Image 1 (tube, rainbow, N blue to C red):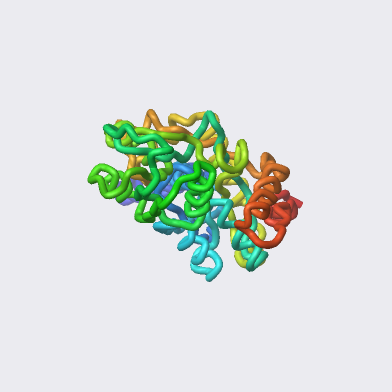
Image 2 (spheres, rainbow, N blue to C red; image 1 turned 45 degrees about the horizontal axis):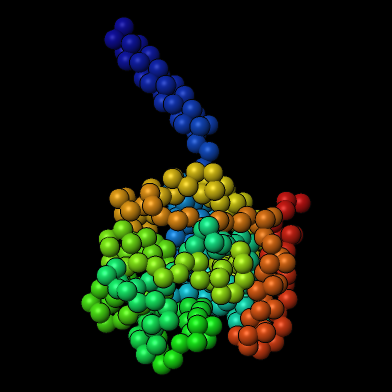
Amino acid sequence: MKKTYIIGLATILVVVSLVVFSINKSTDNSTPKSTLTHIKIGYRAHSTYAPLFVGLEKQIFKKYGLEVESIKFESTNQLTDALIAGRIDAGLGGINTFLLFTIEEKTPGYFKIFSLSTEDALHPSTAIVVANSSTLKISDLNNKKIAAYLGSGIKMMYDRFVKVNNLQNTTLMQMDPNLELPALQAGQVSAAFLLEPQVTVGSFKKISQPLELGLFDKYYVKDIPFSASVVSQTFTNEHPEAVKQLVKASDECVDIIQNNPDELRKILPVYTTTNQEIAPQLMIAPFKKYNEINKTKLQELSNLLLELGEIKNPVNAETMILPDKYVKDN
Protein backbone atom coordinates (compact mmCIF):
# COMPACT_ATOMS: atom_id res chain seq x y z
CA MET A 1 0.00 0.00 0.00
CA LYS A 2 2.79 2.39 0.96
CA LYS A 3 4.72 1.56 -2.23
CA THR A 4 1.62 2.20 -4.34
CA TYR A 5 1.09 5.54 -2.60
CA ILE A 6 4.68 6.66 -3.28
CA ILE A 7 4.45 5.66 -6.95
CA GLY A 8 1.17 7.53 -7.27
CA LEU A 9 2.59 10.65 -5.63
CA ALA A 10 5.64 10.58 -7.89
CA THR A 11 3.40 10.29 -10.94
CA ILE A 12 1.36 13.29 -9.85
CA LEU A 13 4.53 15.38 -9.33
CA VAL A 14 5.81 14.50 -12.79
CA VAL A 15 2.48 15.46 -14.37
CA VAL A 16 2.36 18.76 -12.46
CA SER A 17 5.93 19.59 -13.50
CA LEU A 18 5.13 18.91 -17.16
CA VAL A 19 2.02 21.10 -16.98
CA VAL A 20 3.94 23.98 -15.35
CA PHE A 21 6.71 23.68 -17.95
CA SER A 22 4.15 23.70 -20.74
CA ILE A 23 2.42 26.81 -19.35
CA ASN A 24 5.70 28.69 -18.91
CA LYS A 25 6.80 27.80 -22.43
CA SER A 26 3.49 28.89 -23.95
CA THR A 27 3.51 32.26 -22.14
CA ASP A 28 7.16 33.07 -22.96
CA ASN A 29 6.97 35.13 -26.15
CA SER A 30 10.67 35.95 -26.31
CA THR A 31 12.90 34.26 -28.83
CA PRO A 32 15.12 31.50 -27.34
CA LYS A 33 18.65 32.80 -26.80
CA SER A 34 20.16 30.16 -29.09
CA THR A 35 18.19 31.51 -32.05
CA LEU A 36 18.96 35.20 -31.48
CA THR A 37 21.10 37.04 -34.05
CA HIS A 38 23.99 38.83 -32.33
CA ILE A 39 24.37 42.48 -33.31
CA LYS A 40 26.82 45.10 -32.02
CA ILE A 41 25.24 48.55 -31.72
CA GLY A 42 27.29 51.66 -30.94
CA TYR A 43 26.04 54.63 -28.96
CA ARG A 44 27.04 57.80 -27.15
CA ALA A 45 25.70 58.92 -23.79
CA HIS A 46 23.20 61.50 -24.99
CA SER A 47 19.48 61.54 -25.59
CA THR A 48 19.44 61.21 -29.39
CA TYR A 49 20.37 57.55 -28.90
CA ALA A 50 17.08 57.12 -27.06
CA PRO A 51 15.68 54.36 -29.33
CA LEU A 52 18.56 52.09 -28.31
CA PHE A 53 18.06 52.83 -24.62
CA VAL A 54 14.33 52.12 -24.81
CA GLY A 55 14.91 48.90 -26.73
CA LEU A 56 17.42 47.64 -24.18
CA GLU A 57 15.33 48.50 -21.13
CA LYS A 58 12.09 47.16 -22.59
CA GLN A 59 13.79 44.06 -24.08
CA ILE A 60 12.27 44.93 -27.44
CA PHE A 61 15.24 43.63 -29.43
CA LYS A 62 14.91 40.12 -28.00
CA LYS A 63 11.26 40.17 -28.99
CA TYR A 64 12.44 40.57 -32.59
CA GLY A 65 15.12 37.90 -32.40
CA LEU A 66 18.13 40.15 -31.75
CA GLU A 67 20.80 39.83 -29.09
CA VAL A 68 22.22 43.35 -28.76
CA GLU A 69 25.73 44.10 -27.54
CA SER A 70 25.78 47.85 -26.87
CA ILE A 71 29.16 49.58 -27.13
CA LYS A 72 29.77 53.12 -25.87
CA PHE A 73 31.90 55.68 -27.76
CA GLU A 74 33.13 59.14 -26.78
CA SER A 75 32.61 60.68 -30.25
CA THR A 76 30.54 60.04 -33.35
CA ASN A 77 33.72 59.85 -35.43
CA GLN A 78 34.97 56.97 -33.27
CA LEU A 79 31.61 55.24 -33.67
CA THR A 80 31.52 55.56 -37.46
CA ASP A 81 35.17 54.47 -37.72
CA ALA A 82 34.20 51.32 -35.84
CA LEU A 83 31.22 50.82 -38.16
CA ILE A 84 33.38 51.10 -41.28
CA ALA A 85 36.01 48.76 -39.79
CA GLY A 86 33.36 46.17 -38.94
CA ARG A 87 33.83 46.38 -35.15
CA ILE A 88 30.14 47.30 -34.77
CA ASP A 89 27.14 46.61 -36.98
CA ALA A 90 24.84 49.58 -36.36
CA GLY A 91 24.18 52.81 -34.51
CA LEU A 92 20.70 53.55 -33.24
CA GLY A 93 19.37 57.11 -33.16
CA GLY A 94 22.16 59.61 -32.75
CA ILE A 95 24.74 59.51 -35.56
CA ASN A 96 25.23 63.05 -36.87
CA THR A 97 23.98 63.36 -40.45
CA PHE A 98 26.74 65.84 -41.34
CA LEU A 99 29.33 63.16 -40.71
CA LEU A 100 27.28 60.60 -42.63
CA PHE A 101 27.27 62.85 -45.70
CA THR A 102 31.05 63.32 -45.56
CA ILE A 103 31.57 59.55 -45.27
CA GLU A 104 29.16 58.82 -48.10
CA GLU A 105 30.91 61.36 -50.34
CA LYS A 106 34.36 59.88 -49.80
CA THR A 107 33.61 56.15 -49.39
CA PRO A 108 30.00 55.45 -50.41
CA GLY A 109 28.05 52.35 -49.51
CA TYR A 110 29.29 51.50 -46.02
CA PHE A 111 25.97 52.11 -44.26
CA LYS A 112 22.23 52.62 -44.76
CA ILE A 113 19.90 54.93 -42.81
CA PHE A 114 16.68 53.47 -41.38
CA SER A 115 15.44 56.19 -38.99
CA LEU A 116 16.08 59.84 -38.14
CA SER A 117 15.77 62.34 -35.35
CA THR A 118 15.14 65.99 -36.11
CA GLU A 119 15.79 69.31 -34.46
CA ASP A 120 13.33 72.17 -34.73
CA ALA A 121 12.63 75.42 -32.92
CA LEU A 122 10.25 73.73 -30.48
CA HIS A 123 12.48 70.71 -29.86
CA PRO A 124 16.10 71.90 -29.64
CA SER A 125 18.79 69.27 -29.06
CA THR A 126 21.70 71.74 -29.10
CA ALA A 127 22.64 75.09 -27.60
CA ILE A 128 25.47 77.52 -27.13
CA VAL A 129 25.66 78.54 -23.48
CA VAL A 130 27.61 80.86 -21.22
CA ALA A 131 28.14 80.77 -17.47
CA ASN A 132 25.02 81.39 -15.41
CA SER A 133 26.43 84.64 -14.02
CA SER A 134 27.78 85.84 -17.38
CA THR A 135 26.47 88.91 -19.19
CA LEU A 136 28.14 87.94 -22.48
CA LYS A 137 26.14 88.06 -25.70
CA ILE A 138 27.05 86.38 -28.97
CA SER A 139 28.64 89.58 -30.22
CA ASP A 140 30.93 89.55 -27.16
CA LEU A 141 32.57 86.24 -28.05
CA ASN A 142 35.39 87.79 -30.10
CA ASN A 143 38.79 86.62 -28.83
CA LYS A 144 37.11 84.07 -26.56
CA LYS A 145 37.59 80.33 -26.05
CA ILE A 146 34.56 78.19 -26.87
CA ALA A 147 34.19 74.58 -25.76
CA ALA A 148 32.50 71.88 -27.83
CA TYR A 149 31.96 68.16 -27.62
CA LEU A 150 34.06 65.83 -29.76
CA GLY A 151 33.37 65.17 -33.44
CA SER A 152 33.55 66.76 -36.88
CA GLY A 153 29.85 67.70 -37.03
CA ILE A 154 30.11 70.25 -34.23
CA LYS A 155 33.31 71.61 -35.81
CA MET A 156 31.23 72.42 -38.91
CA MET A 157 28.66 74.07 -36.65
CA TYR A 158 31.34 76.16 -34.95
CA ASP A 159 32.76 77.34 -38.28
CA ARG A 160 29.34 78.40 -39.53
CA PHE A 161 28.37 80.03 -36.22
CA VAL A 162 31.56 82.11 -36.22
CA LYS A 163 31.14 83.11 -39.86
CA VAL A 164 27.45 84.06 -39.66
CA ASN A 165 28.00 86.09 -36.50
CA ASN A 166 31.20 87.69 -37.84
CA LEU A 167 33.23 86.68 -34.80
CA GLN A 168 36.99 87.23 -34.77
CA ASN A 169 39.85 85.30 -33.17
CA THR A 170 37.71 82.74 -31.34
CA THR A 171 39.32 79.46 -30.28
CA LEU A 172 37.50 76.13 -30.39
CA MET A 173 38.39 73.67 -27.62
CA GLN A 174 36.91 70.23 -28.24
CA MET A 175 36.68 67.89 -25.27
CA ASP A 176 34.75 65.07 -23.66
CA PRO A 177 31.17 66.40 -23.30
CA ASN A 178 31.23 65.71 -19.56
CA LEU A 179 34.09 68.22 -19.21
CA GLU A 180 32.36 71.13 -20.92
CA LEU A 181 30.28 72.38 -18.00
CA PRO A 182 33.19 72.08 -15.53
CA ALA A 183 35.40 74.02 -17.98
CA LEU A 184 32.74 76.74 -18.24
CA GLN A 185 32.28 76.84 -14.48
CA ALA A 186 36.03 77.12 -13.91
CA GLY A 187 36.35 79.99 -16.39
CA GLN A 188 38.57 78.00 -18.74
CA VAL A 189 36.19 78.82 -21.60
CA SER A 190 33.70 81.65 -22.11
CA ALA A 191 31.02 79.65 -23.92
CA ALA A 192 30.21 76.08 -24.87
CA PHE A 193 28.30 74.18 -27.54
CA LEU A 194 26.22 71.56 -25.73
CA LEU A 195 23.99 68.62 -26.60
CA GLU A 196 21.11 67.37 -24.50
CA PRO A 197 21.09 66.31 -21.73
CA GLN A 198 23.98 68.68 -20.92
CA VAL A 199 21.90 71.72 -21.93
CA THR A 200 19.26 70.91 -19.32
CA VAL A 201 21.80 69.77 -16.74
CA GLY A 202 23.66 73.10 -16.97
CA SER A 203 20.49 75.17 -16.59
CA PHE A 204 19.10 73.00 -13.77
CA LYS A 205 22.32 73.20 -11.75
CA LYS A 206 22.61 76.95 -12.48
CA ILE A 207 25.99 76.43 -14.13
CA SER A 208 25.00 77.80 -17.53
CA GLN A 209 22.40 79.78 -19.43
CA PRO A 210 21.65 79.45 -23.15
CA LEU A 211 22.48 82.19 -25.63
CA GLU A 212 20.80 80.29 -28.48
CA LEU A 213 18.91 77.01 -28.73
CA GLY A 214 18.41 74.70 -31.69
CA LEU A 215 21.62 75.65 -33.46
CA PHE A 216 21.51 73.21 -36.36
CA ASP A 217 17.89 74.09 -37.08
CA LYS A 218 18.75 77.80 -37.06
CA TYR A 219 22.08 77.84 -38.88
CA TYR A 220 21.52 75.07 -41.44
CA VAL A 221 18.07 73.71 -42.34
CA LYS A 222 14.71 74.23 -40.64
CA ASP A 223 13.39 70.98 -39.12
CA ILE A 224 16.80 69.54 -39.86
CA PRO A 225 17.35 65.77 -40.06
CA PHE A 226 19.88 66.05 -37.27
CA SER A 227 20.90 62.48 -36.57
CA ALA A 228 20.22 58.99 -37.86
CA SER A 229 20.09 55.28 -37.17
CA VAL A 230 22.31 53.30 -39.53
CA VAL A 231 23.20 49.68 -40.21
CA SER A 232 26.36 48.58 -41.99
CA GLN A 233 26.04 47.25 -45.52
CA THR A 234 28.12 44.24 -44.51
CA PHE A 235 25.68 43.24 -41.78
CA THR A 236 22.77 43.91 -44.13
CA ASN A 237 24.23 41.58 -46.77
CA GLU A 238 24.97 38.84 -44.25
CA HIS A 239 21.78 39.10 -42.16
CA PRO A 240 18.98 40.58 -44.29
CA GLU A 241 16.20 39.05 -42.16
CA ALA A 242 17.79 40.38 -38.96
CA VAL A 243 17.88 43.87 -40.50
CA LYS A 244 14.12 43.66 -41.11
CA GLN A 245 13.66 42.82 -37.45
CA LEU A 246 16.01 45.63 -36.40
CA VAL A 247 13.88 48.16 -38.28
CA LYS A 248 10.71 46.78 -36.70
CA ALA A 249 12.27 46.98 -33.25
CA SER A 250 13.48 50.53 -33.91
CA ASP A 251 10.02 51.60 -35.07
CA GLU A 252 8.46 50.18 -31.91
CA CYS A 253 11.00 52.06 -29.78
CA VAL A 254 10.18 55.31 -31.62
CA ASP A 255 6.47 54.74 -31.00
CA ILE A 256 7.13 54.44 -27.26
CA ILE A 257 9.21 57.64 -27.26
CA GLN A 258 6.67 59.64 -29.22
CA ASN A 259 3.60 58.33 -27.40
CA ASN A 260 5.03 58.22 -23.89
CA PRO A 261 8.06 60.52 -23.51
CA ASP A 262 7.86 60.25 -19.72
CA GLU A 263 8.74 56.57 -20.08
CA LEU A 264 11.94 57.60 -21.87
CA ARG A 265 12.74 60.15 -19.17
CA LYS A 266 12.78 57.32 -16.63
CA ILE A 267 15.24 55.39 -18.78
CA LEU A 268 17.71 58.14 -19.77
CA PRO A 269 19.46 58.34 -16.35
CA VAL A 270 20.62 54.75 -16.85
CA TYR A 271 22.61 55.68 -19.97
CA THR A 272 23.33 59.43 -19.75
CA THR A 273 24.65 61.96 -17.25
CA THR A 274 21.20 63.11 -16.22
CA ASN A 275 19.37 61.88 -13.13
CA GLN A 276 15.77 61.29 -12.11
CA GLU A 277 15.52 64.81 -10.69
CA ILE A 278 16.56 66.46 -13.96
CA ALA A 279 14.99 63.96 -16.36
CA PRO A 280 11.42 65.38 -16.25
CA GLN A 281 12.73 68.66 -17.73
CA LEU A 282 14.65 67.12 -20.63
CA MET A 283 13.71 68.08 -24.17
CA ILE A 284 12.87 64.99 -26.21
CA ALA A 285 13.78 65.17 -29.90
CA PRO A 286 11.22 64.12 -32.51
CA PHE A 287 12.16 60.72 -33.96
CA LYS A 288 11.07 59.47 -37.38
CA LYS A 289 10.39 55.83 -38.20
CA TYR A 290 11.57 54.29 -41.45
CA ASN A 291 8.39 55.16 -43.35
CA GLU A 292 8.47 58.71 -41.95
CA ILE A 293 11.90 59.64 -43.31
CA ASN A 294 11.65 62.91 -45.25
CA LYS A 295 13.88 62.26 -48.26
CA THR A 296 13.36 65.79 -49.58
CA LYS A 297 14.57 67.36 -46.34
CA LEU A 298 17.57 65.03 -46.25
CA GLN A 299 18.48 66.05 -49.81
CA GLU A 300 18.07 69.72 -48.87
CA LEU A 301 20.71 69.27 -46.20
CA SER A 302 23.00 67.49 -48.66
CA ASN A 303 22.66 70.33 -51.15
CA LEU A 304 23.42 72.95 -48.50
CA LEU A 305 26.53 71.12 -47.31
CA LEU A 306 27.73 71.07 -50.92
CA GLU A 307 26.98 74.78 -51.34
CA LEU A 308 28.90 75.61 -48.16
CA GLY A 309 31.86 73.48 -49.20
CA GLU A 310 31.46 70.99 -46.33
CA ILE A 311 31.31 68.25 -48.97
CA LYS A 312 33.04 68.62 -52.33
CA ASN A 313 30.82 66.45 -54.51
CA PRO A 314 27.03 65.99 -54.77
CA VAL A 315 25.54 63.20 -52.66
CA ASN A 316 22.19 61.64 -53.52
CA ALA A 317 20.55 61.32 -50.11
CA GLU A 318 18.12 58.65 -51.29
CA THR A 319 20.97 56.21 -51.94
CA MET A 320 21.90 56.49 -48.25
CA ILE A 321 18.52 55.13 -47.11
CA LEU A 322 17.95 51.42 -46.54
CA PRO A 323 16.07 50.00 -49.56
CA ASP A 324 12.50 48.77 -49.05
CA LYS A 325 13.49 45.18 -49.81
CA TYR A 326 15.38 45.05 -46.50
CA VAL A 327 12.40 46.38 -44.57
CA LYS A 328 9.21 44.88 -45.97
CA ASP A 329 8.36 41.21 -45.55
CA ASN A 330 8.06 39.21 -48.74
